[in-house]
Image 1 (cartoon, one colour):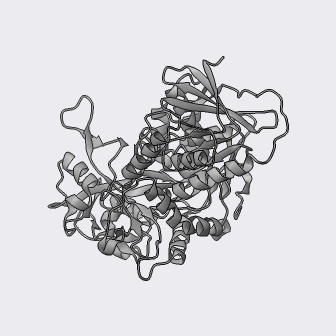
Image 2 (cartoon, rainbow, N blue to C red):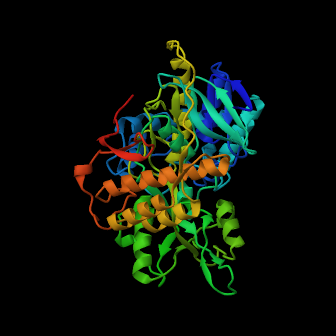
Image 3 (tube, rainbow, N blue to C red):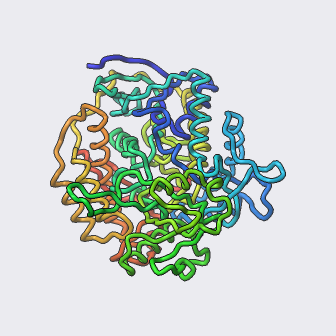
Length: 541
């Protein structure tokens, strides 16, 4: 029994860069659009993005779209879809131009050009930014303002529970719960998932509390597949602080929850990483040293911590002129923690940051379920492969968000046969306590994994799992995290090699038997995630 029902042509789940770009473009194409988000409109991951948007506009001597493509493929560790990479990157300039036309204000550079910075894995200064290190916040502001100005319906405080489907399995709507647990239904022939990633699987992450994998879980339950879930990117430089342990006046432990990011652009502007003895260690690891791809830097920091017994390494940014003005967000976070980056190195450590995999889609956001689309971090388009190149995420959201809008409009022109009554999904799902899931994943599925640890973590999650019916947002999130934990552990246990941000200590070498093999995860008849004996489609148009 639902408390209310409404109708639309397209329901967008999520109010970040991908979701709002798609919503605005679809509305301009004449579609009736409703945007649904479980929190406030700006509470997702987009506003926390600091570095910028990687894009080749053509005004940086020596840089090119081809060079950006090459850098992306190199970072992807052989698992990127070369066709998807080329198409998405080529459409970046137009996507950024549309964003600026919608009011986004990027930092100006000399000669009337946009200012640029460089981040890890990039061969050129091609990252445009806003507010110094507040690019995501500016993009979110501009898109929310444009959505409000256009008076698009924005349903906040409503969590997506399941996609409703007809007897053929095609999408016919979305079931939601509001903050009081009241159910509602949005009937629509198209649903776009733009819900972000699953950083909250881990005890320490750069992600906000909303990043609980809801979209991937919903897509799997609807019959879609996911791929590359084992590739969880850990950002190398997250501000290291400590929390006072409960019941103790002097014992402390590393802080958990969402941790302040120290953008990679700080290293792009000249900062270097130091071990506890004050020695640079990245120069012996990679030709790009401190600007190596993220997976390389994060793994090197982890090894350094293990070798030295330290809790953190340090990022020396004292040589950056005007640090407080160039990086106001980082500076404020450091000062709040009692650190002055102008006068002392910043203590940093890796933390869960970005899901390189997600719901399998084509290059226009279509999943294997008719009427179900995905864009942004929730999706696996083939752009990122085994490791995302820095600042390609906002780019992907802008480009694929626009592509989804066009795909939905085009797909409406293809008539669907008449169908019977909507089939309601089964309400019972696997649920495990969130702290149990986070401890298991942090201990066994972070940087450095092995078969014994992955199996033990899987056993722990299984032992604490029971079937239940989510009745509120917390329940929906816990169900998603439980399913994602099972899926990530299954994929990570299956991939017996080290590639990109998947590091197996018991299989430390890259094994090119796995080259271009993306592991596909689907639900079995009992609703459990399993790795299929197939690989994800590569090169889908």
